[in-house]
Image 1 (tube, rainbow, N blue to C red):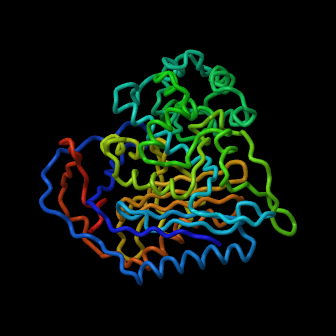
Image 2: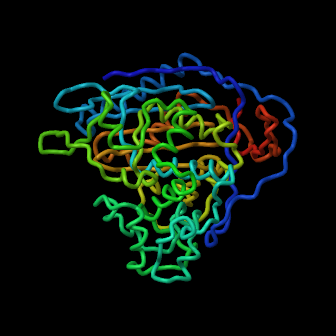
Image 3: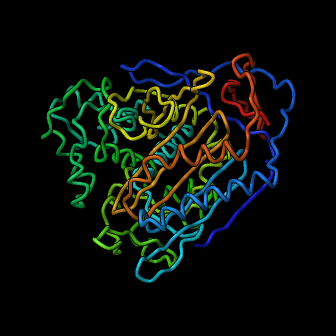
Length: 441
């Protein structure tokens, strides 16, 4: 086992994101609040050495126990608090046969956690005016067609990013996995009979979701892997992140995927599935780069995307039904919505009865598993990457969250009585936040 710990004190007051819950049936975007002046600086949170030691000890124990029991092959973890990566490290092996160790820079495939990048990347181009959330898909991809011409004209970028096109669950995911080009798949949706009206019901997709990337390619005239690199990876200094099979093959620090066998695990080949659908599941990254990504999602780097647009990406659009999803079994779970590439959950504190929001997504591809969660109330982000399918992934987020709470002993605060305030970034850019999503620092 090999690990790297990064501890840094917060350097500036950050924001957490404003969520405006809206109608479950009609997708639309959040309304912006009026801007008020920031009354006074907020106190900082300090992380005592004993808290750091407790957190490290808890995380090591948790993952080493899973390794000893043969539950996983390798894993990498990143935790962000405010503007700092407070923990990043690796456990286990990249290759079970070679016994090489996972570290903070080891690259994994992140599967559907890529969808969060797609939503943010679309937001960057919406902010610039190059595209719009209400753009018709067919205007960017002329051969896109549903069984009904009328419904074809109704499907927007917002619909495909929120899984509300009306198509059945996982329509043509098989064609994505067979490696067909997106433009070919786009012209075949007329073979599928929509189950619902456009914009009224959530049905998770990969193929039609991936068309969001094709829209960006059409608007920019560049391959999506280049656009993501230029607009997200490079500005955030995510040096190990990429969006192609070739880039993963060239890396000398990759965690191979594994398959369970009778007496353990065996490595399997990295395949090309979903690199034809990058927006849906084609990104590669290490824990240290996912830490940088979460810092951005918590309000850093407004030069990449201003928080007002990020609010729109994270705004709940459509409610997710059912009770069989793994995250619906997390302690305190209340309900879920889907935004633009992100799940937005509401949890209720068992002691106080207070609600809180978690922005989350999971991913699985080519025997890799990944989980990411942002806790706006706490200015906190957690990401875990695995190179083997496992049951541990289903509840690693709430378990690690509990470890952090125990270690940090976050201060209590009555957020409900706090006013609406505004923060200013360089360049005279203002944005608003509501105190229920602002940590005490």
